[in-house]
Image (cartoon, rainbow, N blue to C red; front, side):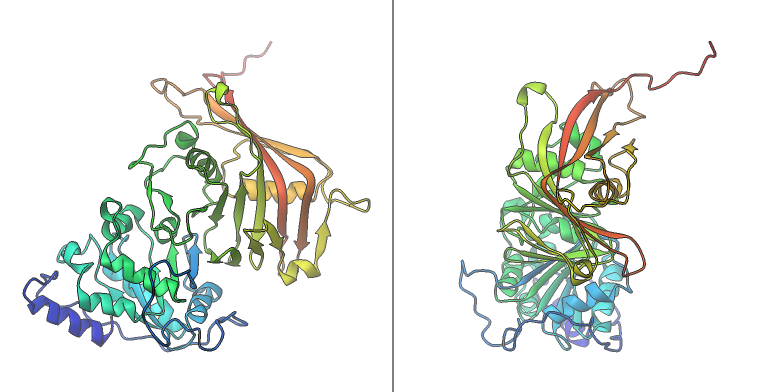
Length: 452
């Protein structure tokens, strides 16, 4: 925490009506030595830096800034993501504010995030706005003019991980914007960066998952307002739903039911240690792995079945370096992929690598869906199938025998790209299709083997 903020906190602690009751401010964390930003960053053009020029932003003015949605588990050595955030905000010397509002240990979490931003050349300050800081009066803190000015003068805003409901309940209680959230929107509209990891990513869409620990329970219909789902802060607008820890935790299973329930046509799930940069209709994926784009524009469902079902879910896996135009629904593979091999299963010269037909016993498993997509686009098979169910479901659960089957298949527009340039097998895959159907699971699932 920098001297400017420490002095501010000390003054606030002495001021009448201050939101801070602590007798002294936390100890300062010395800034880390600046380092070069990530190589070949896409930086806003000269004069477009968020902190330059007039600070006034008109209500309703189009957003010029960048939403950086990080899928969680962001590693300290991920220079591409940390460096790119700083580059987008103006490069060396860009000013950032860090909100560790979601964290159980906001002091430690906020300081660490600020250090990692400073290591890439930023000037970062932690903001004392978190429910777990018991000495802070949050209602006053989100209205304090001196704190608001610190945010207003920033080029970037970073939300750490933790519990996303803490962010929403602090900055938009009861669905109403606080002055602090309005100032963050000012930064964003004029061209600044709003970034968040894990919980800080969940709040990026208008609707978010508040507390939905079980993907299968959501698939079985457990989608309650204020429980599993809630309003978010809406930085990516009303038409795109986002989710985090996505491939690792099989969260496409919970995204599709929410999108169907809330009328979303496009959803973007970001994997851990990876990020999606969203500006307008353009999405770019960077970092350790990738993201899954879910398109429900042509999906069909049958309400008479009485359980989750969908056919024609369009899936596109965006690997790191890929871009996607949400308006045109078009992928732009990375230069690495374009130097590699194009995989067009509808072309006469198509020569796939794989020929066997796999069956995935847990389609919601760690990266199972993205692995299946890479396999299928490079396979002679037209489809692969899988299943998901709860093997530990109790008899007291009225839906204990409800499971789901998955059929992943190629269409006339399916296409992919392959590269091993980085030393491993990497796929980008566009326009595979997914059908989901409810199935009845036998109970008990198995019985002891008896020889005949």
